[in-house]
Length: 610
Image (cartoon, rainbow, N blue to C red):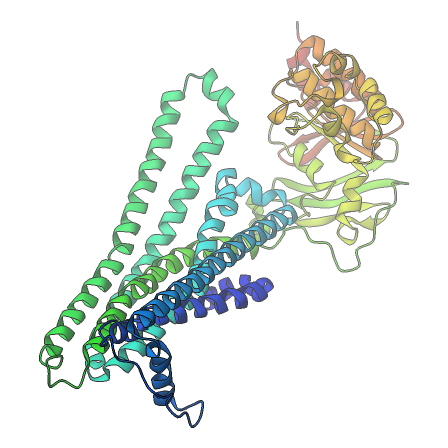
């Protein structure tokens, strides 16, 4: 119930539209009752004698005198004769149906407006919350599953919110109006209809409990399909390279069939409620007709027109009752999706700024690691999960520091701690004597530039990709950054130059061109601290030369931290740090480390031996 109430709280910003939609639904139900109630005057007037013309208007004592008002209405209808009375009734019926359908149209427009606004609000909340989460969350969850939260789950929740509120109002109002007509027309017969109520409630409740479990499995199956599709599309080059199309198709088919089974099992159960409800309603209707068979005969107290109204209202109730039973399946499926959505919204960011965190206005002295240990899952206190152990390291302003070592030594982890993508498990990192956890993370990252092995570009123009970190940049500034990155010439050769759209992830360009655009983006940002993580490892020799020249421009007069497997790129470093199994084992300049004949010497000989 708490989860469902939280789900309905999504309607709070739209309570004005919600109230207006509810009013239209109530009026729709009222005019639906009027349209059915017109059976009585229509039958009376239609079968009245042609000469039935009242001689005087009946006396009306008070506006609450319903009987006299009824007589007044019939006097008005018949005062000019039966034919004109039927004519008047026809226009009244047309008017009632016109107003009824006007309210039906208005409530539909308002319902769609509320549905889409709730969905838009949820998507924006989810997307904004995703931006606040750390890298660890995205490493633990598949991209397709995350995308499924913002697409399929939001759509399911959107339907549940409107079905669980507006549909209940619409169907409930109709049931109430028709029930009122039933009781008014023949209250004794109405008691027979009540026999189906406990059975119907029991059926809906039993099915509802099972629907939630199946709805949860259905949402998970949809997320698996999204994940498989996203992984295949993003890794299509690898799929083609290894001719693994058949394998991927079989893998997708497994997820797709699992989804098919889940949705069939859900719909098979959800589809039971409407026919059962309708069948029980039909049984009640037949029972009513059987009980009333003698009462409609000549001596009956129920007039034929009242009995027709009774039957019409009783059978008209079946449709909104079916609608109410359908609401249950939608709500149960929505609650299952809401568990996943609110689970994401309730996920706390692993890196949070303290209240009143100090902004970073520059880098003046040194970046210092003091006994820093870190593990991606070490928060549970298991030292075996640590990937860094007691790192003591100082990077002076203007220094070029290189981190080398075998794969898995912890080089990239150190680089990720500097912009505070993660916080140390133990120890602290100081920037000019201030703990990074006391600083504003956004201003900290604004003074840093990161160029990695995997170049991330967006499906946008060359200009916008370079200006991503400085969106107020001018054309001249962007071109200057591109020239410094050895990118200006190949950009001009593109169809629209700087206005050329480069495709998703920049796949229309070569690896060297993508990397130079990434470097141009960093140059334009003009960062105080530069982090280069294997920036040239995936390039051919010619591209590496051009990219290395661009990197040299980028590193000039700047604090630089370089991570590299190719030791040729770090020989000019002011200091080289050698990491093994998360620990610093050597430190010094290139020649000093070679003379020690330690780990660095071994790595160097492996790369340059003849």
